[in-house]
Length: 286
Image (cartoon, rainbow, N blue to C red; front, side):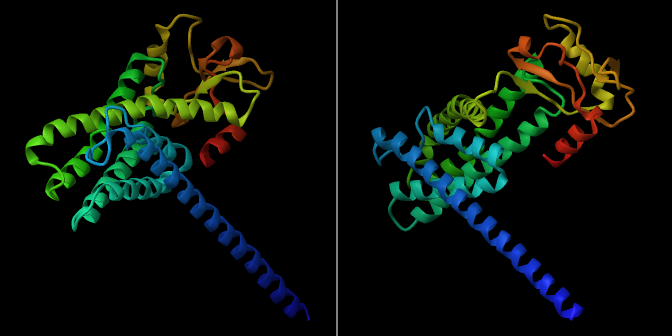
């Protein structure tokens, strides 16, 4: 009897787990289709004034910013959405035996562009804050570099399949790159900020918590010393909640750096969240 009961409990547990996996898969598929549909709709609306004769993006292409923010906020699998949305949109503007191949290349270009932008952003801001000159330069370099990835796939694909002339490659590539840059610079930060505000109406400030390696900690503090305000240093709180300097015995640190407005988080700048076990576990799971 006990054996039958244990077997029944295991079977029930397996069924519950499988059901959760099925629902999770369904939710992910729905999300992928939804994001792809939004990408497709935005592209159609943006391209409508130019008509079907213009196969490359305009000087402002918000879909590029939408693609990057989807991957950054919802995960790398959202690159599938970018590919689907871009592929279907481009397929609707082309006709002929090579239209599928050209559409695949355009879709792949925007998908890889969003993945590269997400990866480079994480690398560029690993130890930097966007409020420093280096951080601002790093952000611009990321945008300028990744915005050219869809060019390589898209423009080359359109010219190779005969939809555009090779002699127009440079002009089209320039317009394509400019549209992606403008779309990323405008749409990505706008959606990120609006999403954060929508998550909680009580949001009053934004914090930047970079990952700083032990060997770069002193350089990080010095880079922020030139900013107006109190002297910036990385610290932790003892059992009496008094500020004490970190021991610099860990490989990584996660200091708080207020973005806006700093007055609402007075006293917090420099506090190492990694010194708190619960915060460190939350960061590791994020």
